[in-house]
Image (cartoon, rainbow, N blue to C red; front, side, top):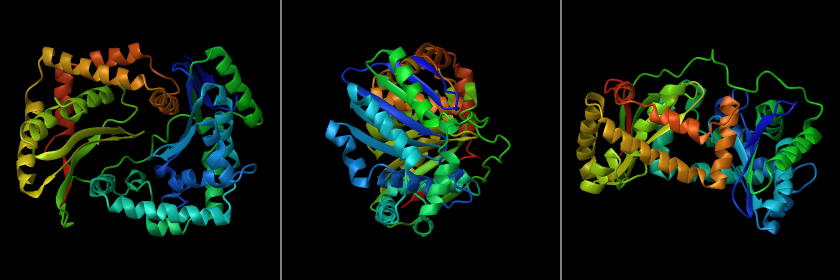
Length: 412
């Protein structure tokens, strides 16, 4: 892999991998939490509307540009990032990269196209609310981070999206779509030195007159951290299924050791494998739930560890009782070295399989560059996971899953 920082401040990384298919991604360090002064939902709306026209291409041309090559163009928004990414034959990577940068730097936000896309986003907000499993998590995170930008919904609200104007979108992109907040990553079966030279030429052509700015990494570490008190709330949605979220704040992206321990802990509790503790009891043994997982999301100044599950109403109390017992045990009884070693190997296997996916690798590289300005090697990641001890895991369980600090939201 070759990586570095262009004179304009943009970070990049290229890695040889894959076969006939190539992947590229342009990651931007801005998201829902950066919307103050613009209106909630503008980051997501900007991600949608940059595809509706540039100074050189109409919406119809953009939508078919990579399709005609057999490629795919996509994007997503999180609380802290907007990511544009493309999958194409490796010989077409130059065209894909050029299109990503054109969308990010030359979007024109035509009035008529904006209104069309506004309708799409408003429908998305409505459909999201019709999915209780997604809606309950969104509401839980909003309550956990109440009063903090992280508590805002990524999609915005119907009212906030209706008030976003084309000029707001232009101002938002002018403010945040700048080289120092960008990371460009490529994974393809091509010579890395050649790929690096092509990336630098493209960046120089686009941003040659930009000077690097000091705000390329991190966020304002003096910003107040989310600190809403624990809560327990049940909402009667008159659904046929119960949807529940139970969780707490967790280590941030910049807690180097604690975040790895938290990731190992959450994978043991409710990772994708059927032998995770929650899956083993709630689903495999008793069949009480349709699905259960423990997720860990990291932000710049905090994180969130959350257990989510859906079940029939008669099984709710059984699930909550079993969950309490599992959490109490992992808080109070350290895992044996042998058991922890097996769980570590399982996690390392999951990560290795994930990293074998070129698209996932490309997106992960961009996130790492935005967060830390570098990309960990597989050996470094393995060493950090192997360093987690039973005592550290128990302490993290006591910290995150302290019953006096846990919050919960249940949709009935």
